[in-house]
Length: 422
Ligand SMILES: [Zn+2]
Ligand SMILES: [Zn+2]
Image (cartoon, rainbow, N blue to C red):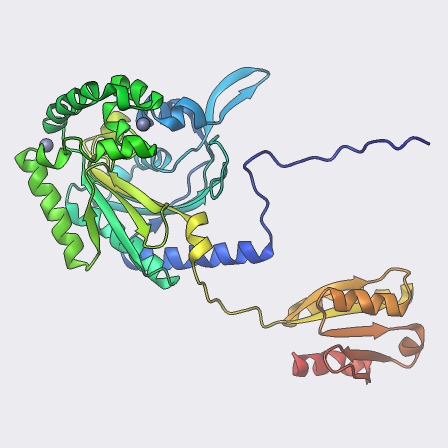
């Protein structure tokens, strides 16, 4: 007989499966995040995984990496549905802010969210196509206090999960007034040094000169350290704004470093931008900035806003999360016949009302030693064994895997006794 090759399905590249331990850890981190941010006045929001594609095209910019190559668009019968999987949170949150009348609430509105986003990124170490993000947005104020507050909230959260060696890199992208003046100077510089630029920067210098500064190529980075600084080209208002922001950070005792080459990947950013780093890590743990024009861009009133996204995957890798380990005892229910099986089924609800975790329903035809071995492998601390003999005598055996002891107890007293043990 020829062996038929069985089809094995694989998860899509860059996507992940998660199991108990990771999920519990992540949920605990989320719980801490929402606890910290709630105390600072943030309310939770959940937005759909799918949004109109236009929403992202409009806000992120045609030349952002996300729009150019990383967005998952949705098709049906080869026809585009005009929908995309969310590649970030801000667009959806602002859409929800406008659509649900949050503009009418006292401003600013502070919103916190958590979940998976999707990016058709080139998968590499520590980068996934289904990254998890924690997200904060403050909509309806231009006060730089709030820029500092989202960073403060992030630091508080990180401190609670024992990530303490953190600092923030900050910059200011200027306004519609001073940024164009700076861009002229930057373009001059890029033209003059054109032959040293990597191909991607060659392209960007024409379409999005500011984003060249974001290039990860070491040669480009070396060059850009000599580029004219946006900080020296800010108008009076932006300068003052940046100073205020830095002084709020100082008041919060946040370790902040000015970085003139810091730009963010999306077009919607205006004014302050920032990235949070761990001293040991080269990858940013969080990043964000001010986006004063986005609400208007989506057809709403003028509502300045600021936000931050925390890369939960990176954070979880270095976090120490101490959560109360599940103290519940783990037990196996071992029935040696159909009759005895009924006893367990009839009383299953009573078992689930006890602080126990049932690790094994050993109702199969295996012999008792196989059943016991399997129960032990599944981590059972106790087994309840019921055979025909025991049933006739109205007894049941409780086996303790830790000390190997076992004792017979009257069936009638079983739950009383279990309540005592557990
Ligand atoms: Zn300005
Ligand atoms: Zn480059």
